[in-house]
Structures are given as C-alpha cells and as structure tokens.
Length: 120
Length: 316
Image 1: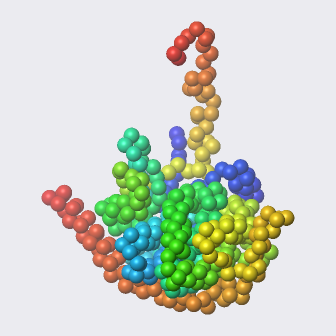
Image 2: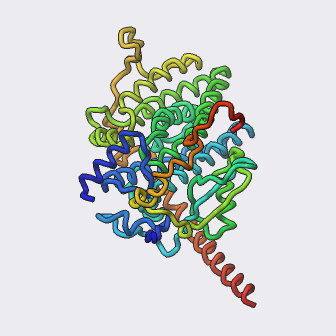
Image 3: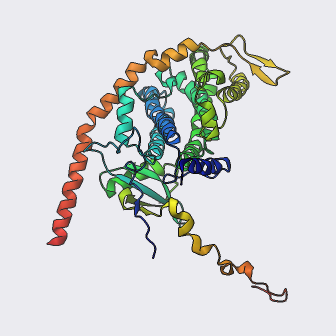
C-alpha cells in the first residue's frame, strides 16, 4: 500500500523557505497562479512551458497566447491552476519507482531470437 | 538523511549535469542565490522595456515602430518566464515586485541610462542585447531546470533583438552625414556601459566561485567580457564606425583585443542608485503598479462574481 504524500505543485513556501523566508507572502489581491501547456503541432502532446497569474481560465488562456505563442509556437493551449497539479514526491522517488528496476523482461531486447525470424 | 549526505548527493547531480527541479532537495543558500539572481534578471527585463518604450511613439517609420513594439513585447515575455522560474523556488510575485519597488532588489544597471536619439535603439539592440546573449547562452545549461528552460526560450527570441539593432545601425551608417554622426554618438555613449554589464573583474567578484561550483554561472565575468569585445571590435568595422576606446588594439600574441580601463567608479555609482535614470525608472514602475491596482482588483472581483453566478446557474 503506497502512502505517498500529496504534493501540490503550487505548494511552495511553507516547506521550501524555512529560514528567513517564512511563508510565501502574497497580498489578498494577488491573482492565482496557472501552469501553461502548449501543443505546438497537431499530433504532438501538450508540453509544460511555464506559468502566469490570471483571474480565471479565460484570461489565463489569452495571456498564455500573448506570452507563449508569439512565434506560432502553439495550436492549442491548456491552463491549469497550479494548486490542482499534484506531483509525486522526489524524495521518495527511489522506492516509488523501484518496482520497475528488476523487470528487465519488459524490454524487447531481453528476448533472444534466431536471425531467421524476420520482422520481429 | 543527514545534511552532509544531502549536500553530497546534490553536488554530484550538479557535477553530472543532472538538472535540479523545484521539489528536489537543495542547499538553502543555493535556493536564495537563485531567487536573487533569477528575480533580478526578471526585473531587468521589465525595467528594460522603459528606455526602449520611450521611442515607440517616435520611431521613424511604421516598420521600425512595429519591430520596436515586437521587441518590447518580447522583453515583457522574458520577464514573465523568469518570474515564473523564480516562483518555483518559494517566493511570490508580489514579494518580488515589492523588493524591486523598495530598492531592495537590483536590476541590470545598463537600463539606468537615457535613450537620447533614435540611433540609441540600434545601439541597444546591437550592444546591450548582444551582451545579454553572451551571458544568457551559457545559462541555457544552468543547473536549475526551470531557469535553464526559461533561458532557452529567451535565447530563441533574443537573436532577433540583436539583428534588428545592428541592421538599423547599418541602414543609418549608409545615410546622411547627420545620421552617421548620430550612430557614432550612440555607440560612444553605450559602449562602456555595455561592457560593464558583465560585472566587476573576476578578482572583485565575490560570489562567482560558489556560483560556478553550483553551475548557475558557467563562465567568468572577464571571460565573457573579452569574448564580447573581440566580437564587437570586428562588427563595428562593418558599420564604418569606431568604438570609443583609444586603447582598443588587437594583440597578436594573445589572439584577443586589448582594451582600456573601465571606469569602475561610474559602475558602482550607477549600481548603487546614482545613475542618470535610476529614480525615473523606479518611479515609472511604481506608478504603473499603483495605477494598475484598480484593474487587478476589478478583474479579480469580476471573476469571483462570474464564478458564483455560474454555480447558481448550474444549481438552478
């Protein structure tokens, strides 16, 4: 049973700035942070390109268009509020990904076939 | 894991060119140094929009106006990429803006000089963006992932900045006597501040060694400065102009250009707030922030109201 700590991507500040920094200071008026994903060409995945502040999804998309696609870098934009991105914990990476380490038989190269077998 | 172990693993990653990402363990000093370096870089982009913004309404043709607008838009975008990268380290945008406005954070002192003629636009593109490129290309391989990715994006756009500047000077250099004089004058004013952009001499640069070890600085100030001088000394010939340095001379032995002494008094004066435009720049930024407060608040409240309205509509 995996007990992974829910790490919110936008959840910076309380853990990350222990000395001198304290909690991340934001004013009541600061707009939420959004992560931006752009599909550069039909057929490709959306890729994370950065973040920006916006009041809502509509503004986030328009601002992303203005800032991240000035040179026709995108045909599609996804915006997600940073607080909704959940990430695996890098501190637990070793144990988390351990199951794949000893399953070399998942790779095609594990299987030795005679040369006579074509197209495989 | 004890701190020494964590530091050892961290340094090994850096040594092996494995990028450090936001949630990875990092020395507190690494985090703070990066926050400072990246946020000041971001501030430089935003403040850098001001000297050039000055000439948008005064550009000599529609083509040049469009080009200048595009360049200034890019600078805003670059500021954003860098603020984004800084925010992954645990500082908020508001806090960074506050640091800039209070004078706590610095920005590149080159932007504290005034833009007096149209030729300044060309000189800035050629020399200032040129110096920035020299500095930014190595940072594409900085150890901190978000910073290096931001730099890659910036560098793709920066080369148009330098080319449009040089091209503009080239056109002017083939023009009337007045235009040619204007080019030489602009070069005379922007040359020394541009080579000061590379920072103090290595011997006077305190943080360099640690930054190099952490790979958030890849070449020394003097090394980059020398490359830049060598490059510009050749390029200026194509403009039929000169660099305002009587000591600039090709050194056959070293295969580099020797150049004159930098006026460090001027450099420190400007860095510490006494440049020609320091006050103007900060006043402009503070004013923009304050004047825009109602817009930020209105947008936020409007979005909240719309969200409530939508919920009610769905519930009904």
